[in-house]
Image (tube, rainbow, N blue to C red; front, side, top):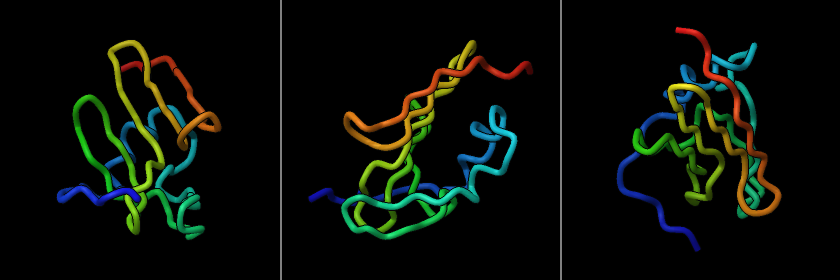
Length: 95
């Protein structure tokens, strides 16, 4: 079973890096934890970071939900875990 890390940020800190490349407020999206079969919004995730990126975890069991890594020329986004995870590489938004 996953152990909960001691310190975390609020899931709403994912707003800026995700909103740059998505046309909606990403913190309103819902995620279902595969370990607990419990739903929560992205804004409720426990987020760890900032280096090498932001990692959002289930608030109940610390299961990995997503990772966001911002590079100067692209954004890497991973949704989910294992072989079924979605991975996106998006061009960075102009500053």
